[in-house]
Length: 420
Image (tube, rainbow, N blue to C red; front, side):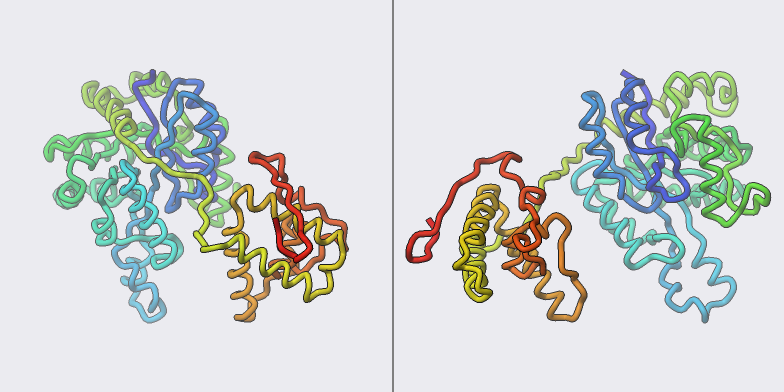
């Protein structure tokens, strides 16, 4: 078992910033006996479903859910940006990075709330959240100081150590033993300077430290491709590198052995051995204590008597449209109805009907079809789609097949037009 786990990692969901994919990281983690895949994409959690799926393919891999959020305490000024002073405009656009990782189910809920808040109410160039909002939703979350883009690192870089200490105290007061000082081994002069200051602050305030690699790509050879992404992101070019760049090629997914070799070759004087070993161990302690269970099964609203409602609407519509007397339509309806009921989908169909009906009543365009759902006669009779699948020779099996689990129940009409 590895004695280290990456807890600061970006996938290609960190748009035009991260180059590595969830699939690549999961494979490499499994091969190197790193038991945890912790993703901390910038301001989002879009990679989570893919993380769950990929980790399930590897017996020894557990997903850990995080995000590197953008912190900005002046995001409320964005609405009046044109009327702001130059100083206020600068404060509005300036964001600091912060790592948040879900320890519990409540922490996961809070993480999702913070991510959503950033995109819905705090978006201005980046999805931003305020410190006050973070404090309000801090329960169940680990917090780490992140990279050079963090506020505490920027203060240390400017030799404003007392202010950096005050900020660390604020975070420790909120997150308590769930707050960590982050040091990085990425061969950047500024980061190396900050590391020493951060280690001193951590010792003075009794804050544990973690070591990270700020992973943005899977292999070292991917560094050039990630640079291209960053230049695209910041309107730079290869010939005119005026855009954002990381002036290091060290941001690949290092194995634990590569991390140790890097420390031995370059960081023994920058990060003392005792602190380095403790920082590595803390990455495992964080991941081991994360206990988040996410139910990925489909969730449909419970609608009372949905099967009977669907039956009544469809029979009424077949009669109204002059289709009821045609055996091919009755047989097709019975076939679809049996499959839908057996698989427990009547609630889903009625729910979608309500959504489509409302959209139409409000003048929203919904289109005549629903992908493979256009092969469903019941979708047509419920007015979810506008295509007659029998007239256009569309198959229901492409949409929902009886062979995909469950039993198929054969139904039929009796003489009084009742289903049995």
